[in-house]
Image (cartoon, rainbow, N blue to C red; front, side):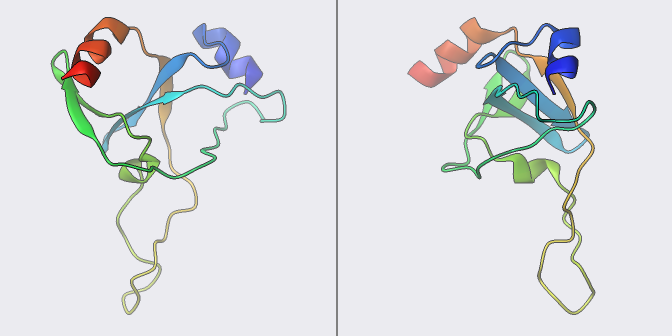
Length: 105
């Protein structure tokens, strides 16, 4: 949300790190006044899973937000994904120089 982004110093199109205990994904922020405070929306899925090491941390740079969701199924007899929401934290990604080095490799 615009309120949450402002509190974190995030502007539209800034790189952000979305993370939880399952992993971290680097994305571009799309700050919207239409989102309620405390909520985040991922508009598209990843075109390419690309797990890299930036500094001393592994992050995904292809936009694969599914890596942050639990892997449980809806029921024991199906293969369908259960999550439709996931708890995450978002912060402005500050290590952009290290990310440029990774992309050039």
